Structure formats: structure tokens, C-alpha cells
Length: 124
Image 1 (cartoon, one colour):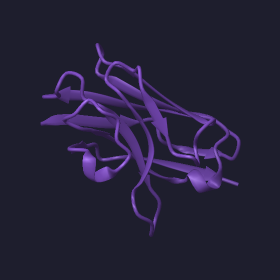
Image 2 (cartoon, helix red, strand yellow):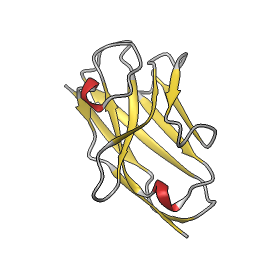
Image 3 (cartoon, helix red, strand yellow):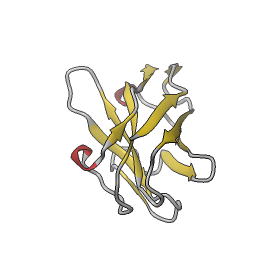
């Protein structure tokens, strides 16, 4: 089982930038794809971005495309989410996740291991 630990969430103002980190340890299949999801109060967990272990492939939710950038350093076991031009609707708990397979996926059910999340709050 892979262990994932997110960090970097905090209170920011609209228009600010923030970079989240996810450190992976434990058993993780070489080549596994990883992703970021978020969950706002009263809403379902939603896909944000995903990336292959090599970093060669990435996908983004329409709502964040052009503002957020996902990246990974597989040698370090670390993934990041650079978030620019944050808006109040980006407020949520952000989770990183890993799956057993190398193909990038956008559904939460396709991921096997999850971190506990980091809170991002964007004030207007």
C-alpha cells in the first residue's frame, strides 16, 4: 500500500497562487499514475488533474485547465499542483491519489490509495 501525504494548503485571496505537494512512500507500483482531486463542503469529490509516473502525460478538469499545472518527480516520489489565479470556487480539501495502473484516469473510483487531504480556502 502506498502512503500519500499532502501539504501546502492554506487561506489565500482570490487571484493568488498556491503550490500543493504530495509525498509518496511505501509500496507504489513503478509507472503508476497519480492525480489530484478536491472536495468542497456538501459536494462530491471531483477530479482536478492527473499525471503519469513519468510526467509525459497529464489531464486536467475543464474548470482548472490553464490555471493549474500538475507535475511529478518520480525519483523523489513527489507530486505537485501549482494553482494560479485562484478563485473562491476553488475552495476545497485537496487530495492526492495513486492508482495501480499507468494510464491516467479521471474518476476517483479508479484510484487505490489516497492521502488525507489539505485544506485550500480562497477568500473573495
